Amino acid sequence: MIFRLSQIPELSSLSLREKQQVKAISLSLLSAKSKVILAICKLALLTPLFMALAYFEGWSLLPVLLVAGLAYPLLTAPIEVQFALKNLDQALSQFKQSQK
Image: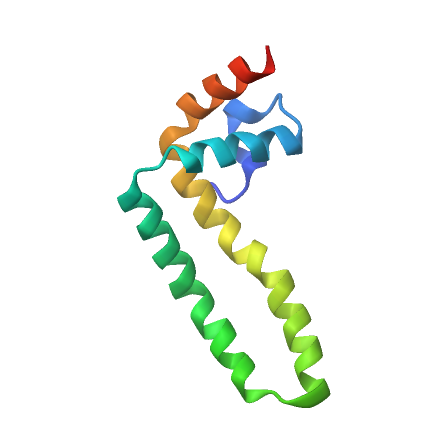
């Protein structure tokens, strides 16, 4: 299972910003059904984290919010990468055409 963009061999020659652009293109090519499933997966993963925020008040909420803000991309990026793999070849060809 691939968790990071750097683990995808087809993208090894690209910079991090270019890899992120290819991922964005690939995610935009998803069908509506796949986009809904992606959103539901992300929501299901993040719901316990944000439900835990309801138990903190005042200044004790600040460090928890910081952790939640840092955890968001760490938790959602692997899911987005898995969904992006479906259209990776098409997204890569579109990216290369846009670079010409």
